[in-house]
Image (cartoon, rainbow, N blue to C red):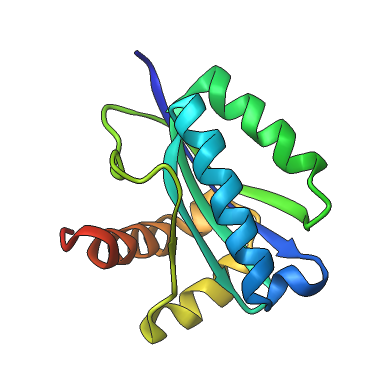
Length: 139
């Protein structure tokens, strides 16, 4: 199996940027679809933006990214990381939702405005490390 990891940021549209019920709907549908497609990862919402990490086989991730591009609940998707990996960092989470730690706020603000992976490698690694800590207590 050839695994890949994608990390992207997008701009939330309308109520989905701050409302609880739209977020619950997104997490529920994503969890079902990702279990079906063997995709894992997490979703983080901060200041009307989504930050999402996805792990899976290339064909499954491409299909998912196509669905995301057509989803009207967000726009302006910017892929910051798209890389092959040896293992999943979030194997037990079809779609976990995490809240950002206050220490991540400046990092997330910077990630939201960037377009070049070379500018954000450390920041993406920090978001992933904090997500792992929040979800399963490991770094």
